[in-house]
Image 1 (tube, rainbow, N blue to C red):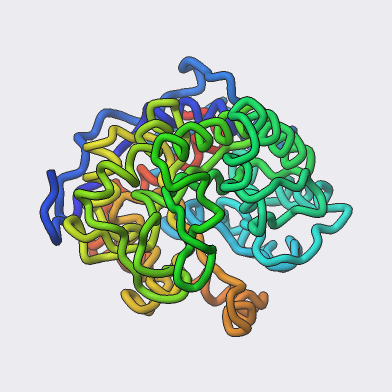
Image 2 (cartoon, rainbow, N blue to C red):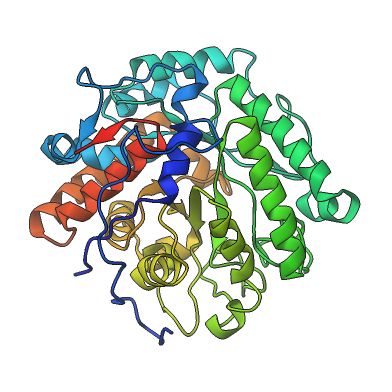
Length: 415
């Protein structure tokens, strides 16, 4: 059993935004607990919180939520709070039961054109959701071929092209404009920038990065990644840097099949520097990849305490929100066929917020149909409840994840 892990410092910024390892070392000790996330009275950063988007806050009448309040919630509600729902058609109506159960938010998938009334739909969904704080409304807006809302927000080149043709000042300005446009729609989280260091062709089934990477040079990837991150914060949305610990040079695309990063010794000099720079700059959220890491873990990083608690937390000192890549990816379904079990394993390993869903194949799209999505969500809640009941998932670890998510949503926390 992995010990629960508590983090706090970086999410002070997230709340203001929206408010040496050996192979197989997955039992590596996580960082020592250092307390709950900071209360609303803690020092704020310059980045707005999700609560600043104009959506209703749902703040408790007492003015804040305590850790005891969270612990008193039914396990199913706490489990729902760490899950983001996928939507391929911007259809909030079909997600209403899951949002009423307390799901953390929505992630837009696919290439459908955003409806003209998207902002109104988001506001209505947030108004009726059974949760304190605004929903986390997410999109992948990286630039180039990964722009879920490109008809509704500024169109940006691929990150590699941005780095080759623009200054960091210009990139920060463009990302800020993107952030403002997202915020106007009601989208308060951008799953970007990609900090992977890669110079190969792609993206493709063999390489998840390619032009999604700013550069194959760690210094350039760091510099431009930080510019994009800061621009998004300037524009009022929460950036999520990805895909830790770095997919540059990986053996394949984990959306399709299991793959490995370069060995840990090589990651330390190539893949990790951009993430270290982002953490030093106060990055509020990090997405964990689904690749294995030779020299550290034989398990997908998103299911590995050696990666999350050990490398990211203990060694790099990250204390913010930990988000998984999609747990519907091919690399995960091979390792853990049950989506519910994958979610429980991710939370146990130190993740705070889980993503699932894909539009890569027709079967993936079919799995997003309302009835099947509801079944997947209910399976997640049932598995989490069973894992908590058996002690496989420590209740304190689940509570810590819930608290991190609430703090990222701008919910005032106390006690």
